[in-house]
Length: 608
Image (cartoon, rainbow, N blue to C red):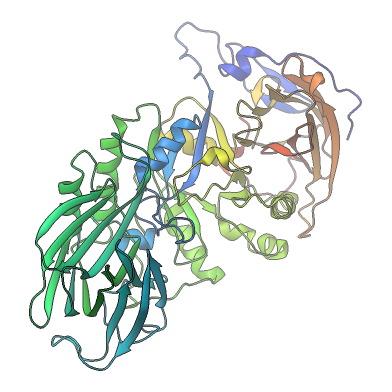
């Protein structure tokens, strides 16, 4: 493998920018590229352009953010705002599929103890000035409509301003985090000490939205209070309050979430709301003491689990398309009851999980995941292995579970993890496991993408932003990823005699071929590492690679040439590092094999 013939020869502009020009016929040491007839009736070659995408994005159908970080999961609105600010062309919505379906979700909370069948962890959260707080699960009183225990909360407001004490039940994986559009809540409450300065409160935290129509960015909240008045008040810009008078004995609060969001904020697309958090508590002031009991929460949903979420999110996509016309929205999902997978297809379908009752268990087996991979691929989908945090030996042995793509760039910005994922990827490439390497955004918050030092973006060469073309590009490996803030205009490609070859597999009798290495808009002082790996199909779980450093000034005309030797099999990919030696770009490889090698090569990856 030689770096001695690196040159500054400019790449064929028509071949890389607009596809093959008419009449090009190339033979590169045994690689026969078919001629294109130079006839006026020949259809024009498609124009390929870079299309940037986020392939792992969560919104109102997924769980909320952490309480410490301000709570509230992302809305589709907040994610589209971030995509716009960061010049992203395409957002693939990849909410957790089982959350979309409310698969195995609880239909209520009985307040019977600290764990509620092992999945509910309770935490006290106080706001303002309160004292004498107490939270307990009690045998009596309890709702007349439900046996078992109930929750009692008590607190004294020691200041003139309201203070509140909540008990919050962390919903774990099987309670209520999903889109609220079809959801009504009811809860039985008993106001034991309620008055003008002491109230019962149930708080519903929905989704985060950016600044809009004069309101600040933040989490939109509904509060349902039992006190001495009846009112509906927008108490704060992002907090709508429904108050009802206390009654003697038990009473039922009914919370029609979608209707109330529409009433308080009529300018919003109310359906773009998730149920992120529920809190149960009392509020008090002026040294008053509030005490109340909570029981028998019912979560009433009407959804058809496989069809309703798809139709609802498609309607939201259509509604937001007018507001964000420059961001193409495409529907996918993160399959999450097996090892996590993202699935991309033109006509998206949710996977029909078998009924396991309440709180179904994750199937992390190889066999269970492979079954889901096959189900989607049989329907024309491509499947991505998400955050594959396993040993390279298993990754190679299972051939990445038969997936088509794998996340390499890590969402947490841990470069040790990225390094491990690159080694894992190279081990697969060594064994002719043809995967498209992508970047992992995996954002649930919808806040400040640009502030993430690790924000890597995947781009593809594609003639359009339509799902069919983007899937074809990903399937064939016509993709690279780049650092959004350190190299926002970064572009990478590989070519052979003007033919785009990144991601492709070339079988040839030639001992070596010249590869055009394309790197556009390189930052000053950056370096392109040409990574050449052995592809011996030996089953080894460690890569065998060599790196050749090429300075940015060698790419004055966007490209240089590298002679790739075939040997018993090889591949070539690119890494780009800035002047501080930070990884800012990564290309997919091309593979060079003998025509006598018995290797199953996907049709999309053959260079034809």
